[in-house]
Amino acid sequence: MTTHLTPQRERWLLLTLASIQFTSVLDFMIMMPLGPQLTGLFGISASQFGFLVSAYTFSAGLSGFLAATYVDRFGRKRMMLTLYSLFGLAAVACSFAPSFAWLMAARVASGFFGGVLMALSQTIVAEVVPYERRGRAMSLVMTSFSVATVAGVPLALFLVAQFNWHAPFLAIAAMVTVFAVVASQTLPSLKGHVQTHADGGTARAIVANLRAVLVDPNHLRAFAMSASMVFAGFAVIPYITLYLQANAGFQSSEIPYVYLFGGVSTLLTARWIGHWSDRAGKAYAFRRLALLMPLPLLGMTLSAALPMAGVLVVSSLLFVVMSGRMIPGMALIGASADPQRRGSFMTLNAAVQSLAMGLAALVGGLILGRDSNGQLTLYWVSALVGGCASVLSFALSSRLRLHGAAAQ
Image (cartoon, rainbow, N blue to C red; front, top):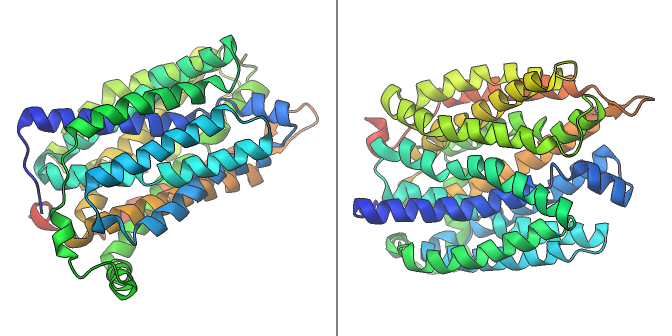
């Protein structure tokens, strides 16, 4: 059930989806470098900060499970614009948060509305772009992660320095307004899947559709691979800023360099990884990167003794490998879905990923401690846990059955 667009319209579509992803990713990522400020401002521990990060992802997971009951019954464009507008309103709520409780509630709302955006973007790519070019298309959409780290996070931290920590969320809300207008002009309606579900939105039909997705052994393997893939990074990533300031002596003004160099590195390598995965095979590319992932994870958690240049090399390698796995990984996962239920599958997959991120952040936070000097301890144990999850994703990827052209 693929909709073919002209090359020009396809490119505009991918750029629009990348813009939507950019604001969603930035909204999530900006919390992590704000860790030292928020823990000091609200007097919370590292594990409580991990819960603040997890609140977004757990809410996104819940939203994804609920959306799976209706996502295939509406046009993709209508769904995207509605959820994106509500996501923008949640960003406004974050920007005016006067207390920790308010911020927690606003982050829950942001996750609830933003949690489905990534799934919808990946679903649209899977329905519009042929599989043989999907690695390159996915890499273009996922450059949003790189741009968010290259430009978004440093700019957001600049706004924090010039104004306060509320300012980046107001800027995100302003960008959402602009990108929503662009999306209303560039997104195709993509209603073909709605006809497949012409049996109506009865509770019995909804349950039957979900059951069909959840009882498929191939889908379950894909969900497990997806969960282990994102768990690997997020056992370590949320605490990088805390670690570098507490253990490596980084100043708050030096933290943006970590995201700047990491983002530039992923921006330069994402397109190459996309082309490589199309040429060498998505499974081959993913497995090589999944096996490589434990090394930069462990290196990051043991980098405190390195000079700043060394830390930037290690952190940039971690960003490159972590984001690089997602390009062939998501192409494989999208191709493993039953085409008739791809929307529900991808939405559930986004929910699984969000829950895995939240669980990883919680586990990482529970592992961490502080010594008498205020330095983080046992960070390397989080890296070992994440590395094991990456190896598990490698093993699960070999058991996926692909549909359509991907299986040929």
